[in-house]
Image 1 (cartoon, chains in turn cyan, blue):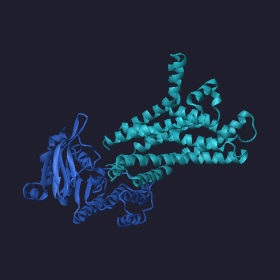
Image 2: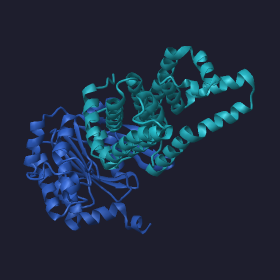
Image 3: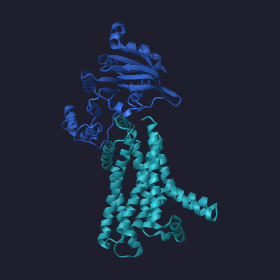
Image 4: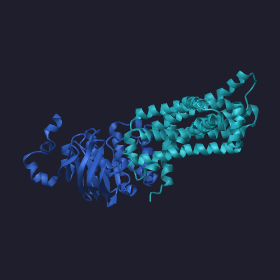
Amino acid sequence: MNTMNLLLITRIARQELLVNIRNKWTIIFAVVFGVLIVGISYIGIVAEGFSGMQNFTRTSASMLNLVLYIVPLVSLIMGTLSFTGDRGTTELLFSQPVFRAEVLLGKVLGLFFSLSLSMIIGFVVAGGIISSVTGGEGLLQYAMFVILSLLLALVFLVVAVLISTTNNRTSRSFGISLFAWFFFVLFYDLIVLGVSLLFKGQTANIILFLSLFGNPVDMVRVASLIILDNVTIFGAAGAALLRFLGGSGLSITLLTGSLLLWIGIPLVIARRMLNKQDI
Amino acid sequence: MISVQHLTKQYGKFTAVNDVSFDVKQGEVFAFLGPNGSGKTTTLKSIVGLCLPTHGTILVNNLDVRKRSKEAKNLISYLPQRVIFPETLTAREVVRFYGSLRNISRSAADEALANAGFNGFSDKPVNEFSGGMIQRLGMTVISLPDSPILLLDEPTANLDPQGVKQFRDFILQQKEKGKTIIFSTHLLAEAEQLADRVAIFVSGKLGALESIDDLRTTFLKTGTIEDLYLHYVGSSHYEK
C-alpha cells in the first residue's frame, strides 16, 4: 500500500520554500507586488478626488485587476521553473526513498508558501497603511479577498505543474504556460461572449453562467466582487447572477468549492502523469 | 543483491536498452562500459526506478523496483551523471536535506560533511563551488545513509586528477565495507582497477559480461582492456 508520508512532504516543502525565498525573482515579485498594491490605493484616491486613503473594500476592488493579471502569470512562471528544473537535481531527489507523489506535493506546497509569503507581505503592508488612515472598516472583506488571491495563485501553480509534467521540454512548457495565461486572462471571456452571441435568451444565459466555472480568473473576480459588495457593477446581470447562484453566501461557497476542484483535479492528473513517466 | 532480467527500454521507436539481463552479487563492484548512448545510464536509472522499463523486471534484494519502489530505493544511493544542487543552498543545507529524507539526524549530516573535508565551505552557497567540489558534495550525499548499494553514473566525468584519485579511494573504502557498487565509466583503467566484473554495452545490448580475473587470465595476457573494449564495441561504432 503506497501510503504517503506527511513528514517527508513537509521536509520537501520546507526545502522548496527555502530555495524559492532566496530566488531573486521571488524577491522581485514581492517588491513589485507590494509597491503596486500600496500604489493602487493612492492612485484610486487621486482619480476619485478624495483626500486620504480609500477604505479596505474600495482598495480591494482596485487591487482586484492587478491580482487577476499578475498572480496567474507569476504562478505559472514559478511553477514551470520549479518543475522543469535541472535534471541533476530532479534525478537525485526522485532517487531518494520517496514516492513521486510526495515530491510533487512537497514541491507544490513549498512553492505555494513562498508565493503566498511574497503576496502576504504586500497585502499586510498595504493593509497596515490603509487601516492606519481609515480604520478597520472592511477588514474582514479584505482578508477574504486576500484568501481568494492566494487560492488563485495555487490554482495556477497546479496548472503549471500539470503543464510541466505533460511536457518534457522546458521551452515547450513555458510556451504552453504563457498561452494558458493569455487564454484564461484575456481570450476566455472573448470566446464565451462570442459563443453566447450565437444563442438567444435562456440558452445564452446558461452558457454565460456555466462558463464562469471554466475559468478560475472569472471565479475569483466574481467571488471577490460579491465579497466586496460590488456585484452591483454587473447591473441587472449581477442581481441575476446572485439569484441564479442562490445568494451571496451560497455563491461564495459554490465558487470557492469550484476553485478547490480546479486545484484538486489538475493535481490528480499531474500525479498520474508523473507516475507513468521517466525522470 | 540486484537482478536485472530481460530489461528493455524503448523511447518511441528507439530502443535504448534491448533485452539486457545480469545479476550483481552482494559486495560486488560492477562496471558498465560502453560508448555514449549504449544504454548504461538508462539501465542505471531503471535500477533506481527513475526510468520505467518497457519490458523486464528488476529486483533489488528481492524487491520489485516497480512495485515496491520506496523500500528498494531505501537500499540504494544513486549519483546522477551530472549532479546539480540549488545554487542558493549551502553545502550544510544540501546534506541535511538529503539526510532528512532518510531520517538521518542533522548532527550526523554535519559530521559527514566535516569528514568529507568541507570545513570552511560547509556554510558557503553551492554557487561558489567548483565542479569537483559539487561532485564531492554529491558523493557526501550518497555516502551519508550508508546504503548497501551504490549506483554511480560516470562519477569521474567532471573531476580533475585529484578528484579521480579521491573517487577511487572512496570506492575502495566502500568496497571494504562490503557495499554492492555499480558504476559506469569511460575510463577503462578505472574499471580494471576497481571492478570485479565489467559489462560492456553496445547499442543497447550487453556485448560482454566478464569478470576482471577471467579477463586478466585470458584476454589481458595478450592485450589491454582497451583492446577488449574495442573488440566488443568495434571501431565501426565510432565510424558511424
